[in-house]
Image (cartoon, rainbow over all chains, first blue to last red; front, side, top):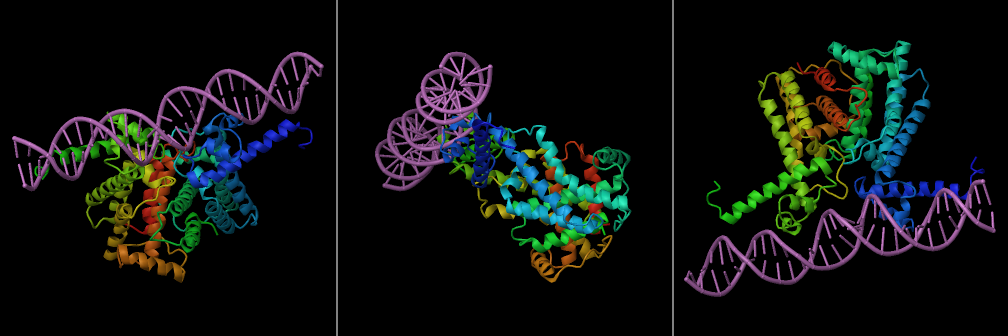
Length: 232
Length: 232
DNA sequence: TCGTTGTCAAGAGCGGTGCTCTCTAATTTG
DNA sequence: CAAATTAGAGAGCACCGCTCTTGACAACGA
């Protein structure tokens, strides 16, 4: 489908990709804040000003990298979900959580780009939120399917939700799955923040000296949170 | 106790403090990566090179800010713990969690400095780890006291710990409280990572558009996690 | 009281940054 | 084939962290 394009268009698409690849490579050594357009250009054998033909500024390149990262994680997580039969929520949850961690450990700098502290002065455009939601959607989708099948059995009730909080979750449920009860969605968001909190702790070095290595703890926690949610 | 010092020593101590204060102010607008010594100096009415008499380089100033931030959060959390009777673990847990969030929301940039992604190229010196542990120590201390008093009653057992994982937690217990069983410590670390994961999500904007505002969710989650741990 | 010594701010300068502007060359389009 | 569009190159602006040198001044012992 690329045949119809002119040589210039193909060159442009290729070079755009090469710029992103080189920028990704530099994320590893300098981080998002230290990403240097000049260094990217130098490595690609061109002059820095030429880069501005492809990305209007540093933020725009960063946005492209962020969207790519969200989509890469999202696709990984979606694939992990598809690899397990739909009617086995516990196995799906396990598969998805471990896939997220594996991706994060394999791509720590891209993970940091999306789940680390926001780049100062950078404001994420609307375009990123759709990609950002993909992983959450998969994780909550497991709960939705289990709830739909009637197999969601939390280990204990927990404190009742206040009316304002329940109302908040009803709004969220409209977007992700109307069947999801506020209590279930609440548990889901707790598990969600726990999962990414744990990944942050591991990747940002807060576990060094205590729960280190983290493999056993992670695997066990995934099971514990699955019981907390009520997946069987 | 400052009386015995020379004018020069007093001036030095004061200026050191002023540099840190101004740097903290700049964290808010430029973030850790964009912290500029020149800008700090300009704001203080001095020349940039003069700053190097007080901090050998940018990293050393950053280290001072990081240690200050860990200690500020640690002191806040310790005070919140002291404010509640020792034999009321649930109330202590609640007080400590809410104090941590209040501090984080009031000092988002200092929170980001210590719990956000690590500053690229910066390696935290040993001096930071002691301050870093203060908050964890308080949170786990609540569990330790409840366990010691025999009032720790988790809502459900959860999956059994593998032997390697239990061994890891026995090592950690030696440092924070030998009475803490591996299962309890495991729950503590889950709650810990959940708490900071939730704060990260709130501060880094992952809740925008879903669980927003986050007050109700946070308060409810603190109670839910308290039940998860078994605090009464 | 007077040097000596250690400390300090200032300034110039190096190599780096993001970004803009202009100029030239190449390619696509009519 | 000419016109219009697009690409890269280069100079330049204001900024950055950091180093080195210089001259002023406070602290202290003789």
